[in-house]
Image (cartoon, rainbow, N blue to C red; front, top):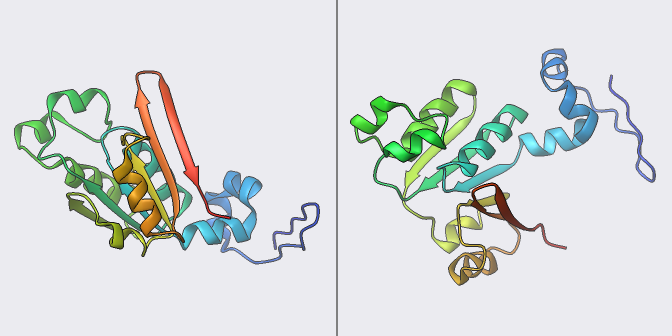
Length: 176
């Protein structure tokens, strides 16, 4: 039994399977059992899987998220993707494979029990509302379209990341 007590919180005495306990030992130290279970039950949407989105998808799947939907608008993997997305291979460039399919394929190898959906295109604002968390990677942080989507789905936790070389802008809105 794993027991943790933080200031002002009740004792967390939920049980994990021993295999989960070993696999997630570092995460348990940070999140606790209830936080890890909450994360594992989240329905996550990631829009844009070129670089930041692919890394976020990999990391949350390794934490145990079981439901992940990927959206990306790119027609196919390009040569420049090989330098920023570790899932892309030269065969994907030659085969004109859609980027979202390449990332989904590799993520399914990492987490075979997870439900991973890959959709080429952009989600509609009303679709976003069905997710626990929406991550917009590679978006323009100050783009009004992204924030209109945010307003249409107020219960969804929202993260928007824009990178430029070694710098990044990340905006999050987890509600009140």
